[in-house]
Image: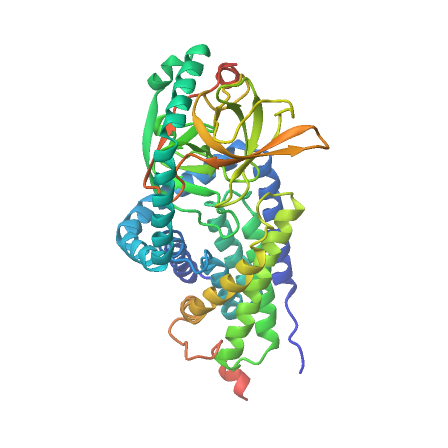
Length: 178
Length: 285
C-alpha cells in the first residue's frame, strides 16, 4: 500500500470510527447499532484485495478494540479474517457483479464477521458475548449495517482506486482488454 | 470459471496479522502493562475528535432517542405514577427502614460515609458494543483520582463500578451484568449474601449466602456489606427485596431484588473515591 493510500485509509478509518462511537452508538434499532468498522473491513477486502483487506480489517478491528471491554485483538482477529476472505471472494466473482449481489455478499460477510467475533470470544471464555440477543444482533446488525454498505464501498473504492469508482469494483487494466 | 491464483504474499500477511492478534489477546488478557498504556494513549489521542463529534452529534442522538422511546416514556411515566402511589402508601414502612439504615451505619461505625470523597462525572457515551450492554463511559479518569473498581452511584444507590480508567475517561460496568458479584447486607439483620446481575431491565438476584432460616422480608433494603475484601464501601443502598424464594436443595433463600439506583437516561453519576485497605496496601507494597 502506497503512503498516499495509507493516509487516505487512516483518514477514512478514523472518520468512520468516530461516527460509530459518537453517532451510531446512540441511533439503535431494537437496541442494535450498525457495525460500520466491520463493514469497512469488508469493503476494503472487496476493493483492495485479500492482502489489503486483511491489513485494513486488522487496523479497523484494533481501533474498535480500543473502546471495547473485550481483550485487545479480538475484533482485529475477526475483521482481518473477514477482510481477507472478502478479498479472495472478490477475486472469484466477476468484477462487474451487480451492486445488489455485492450488497448481499457484504451482509452475509457481516453475519459471518459477528459470528467469528463471538466464536473467538467464547474460545477465550470472554463473558457476555453469546447471549439471548445473539440472533437479534446478527439479523438487525447485518441489515442495519447493510444500509451503509454502499457508502462504505464508495469510501474504500476512493482509498484504493482514487476517483475511478463507477460502480464496478476494480478498474480494468488496458492489458486485460487484449 | 478459472480461479485466480493468490500470491503467497497475501497468505503470509494474513498469517502475520492473525499471529499478531492472538499475541495481543493473550498479552491483554494477562494485563500486560505497556498494552494497557498503549490503549490509554490511543484513546487519549482520539478523544478531542470524539469531543468535537459529540457536540455535533449529541442533538441527533437525543432526537432519535425521544422519537424511538416515545411509547416507552409514556409507559415509564405510568409506571412511575403507580410506584409513587405505592411509595406514599408504604411511607411509614420506608421511614422505618431509613431509621434502621441509620442505626446500622452507627452500629458499623460508618457515620463518616457522607464524608467519603466523591467525584461527579458526566456520562459521555453509552456502550459502543452490541454484545456488552452493561457498560457506559464517563468523562473523568485517573486525573480526577478515579481508580479501577471504585463504586459508581446514581440517584438511589449503587449502579456499577469503574473499569479500565483512562486519564480523562473511564468505563463503568453496571451491576446488572450477570458477571458482577456484590456482597450485600440485609438492613435490620446480620444476613450477608452475594448479589449478582441478571441482565438489562431484569431484577437483581441474591442466590448465595442467605440461609433458609434467615428472617428476611419483602421490602427490606439491601446495602453494600463493606466487608474487608469488598471493593465497595459499606452502607450504600443497592436494592429492595421484591420476592423471597426458598431453594430447598441448597437450603438457602433466594432474593429477587429491585435495584434502587437509576440506570436509565443517566447524565451524571458520582464516583466514590474509596479504595479498600487491602488494595491500598497492595499498591504501597
